[in-house]
Length: 137
Length: 246
Image (cartoon, each protein chain N blue to C red):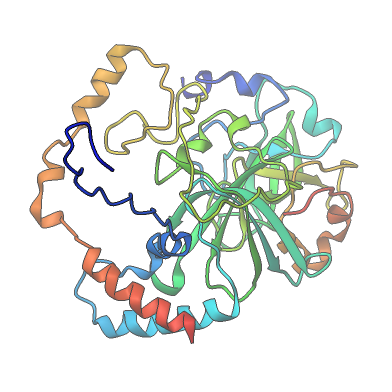
């Protein structure tokens, strides 16, 4: 019943998150894929969901890798923004944004239009993802 | 002069010229930033005094302009991970919170169909510049409902030019009524607890009446909740203006 409140899950243009009180990203959170990869943008009757967070705690913040279930496949992804307010001077986004990634860290898509926080530059392993990003916050 | 009666008319002095001293008008209108006013509590006023000294020190070095909720600001911060070591963010101020040195303000903007909010600390040394791009007060003190409003009300051009400043007269109030996205919202903004005047509710009358069930009309008459800040404000204003003059 909760899923039928908004018809966002049927369109691949999921511009708004569905749940109201979603905080940081954990298992079974619905996320929004932000890059222009085919996997992320083709419509499917189920929204992409997180099934595992590669973290000691099961909660994923900006810069953490998670395992996503998209279109019946498992894919790794990088969190680039969440609805939970973080430390001051960091941006808070209106939807949980995620960029699809391979096992070796290469991004699947070729362009990221949505703004990405600067603090991702801290860890050097995401330089390829940051190279395809257009806007920074 | 002799009037028609033959008697001299009573001497009428000429009307005095009214001198409007604009400088005095400017001094009369004073703005004390809300984070200077200490919250009500049993903490030692010494703590607030020391914080105020530090705040005045910071304000002498770095100019924090007068701004209210609803102003469009551009903030440049020093960022070690940014391209030119400085990042600029433009947004509408939706909330001013915190007291003392931890005072914060939240700026909101919609970039590429993605809503972004940044919470900045006013006295953070990483902030390099705060510019007021648009001077505009809104009907409410807290514009958190912009998250559930249509995105057009939160979009502001990043390369907006600063509006021409007024002559230190009054700050204009924008009586804009914002249209919302369909329900559900993050908070039930129609309830009287939030006391929002800046939304155009398109809800049926039944829902509005139902929302009034949660009204607490006794709150405004509650004497224990009263906090009169006028005398405290006067004292702090004198302290701050003297501190800034030196």
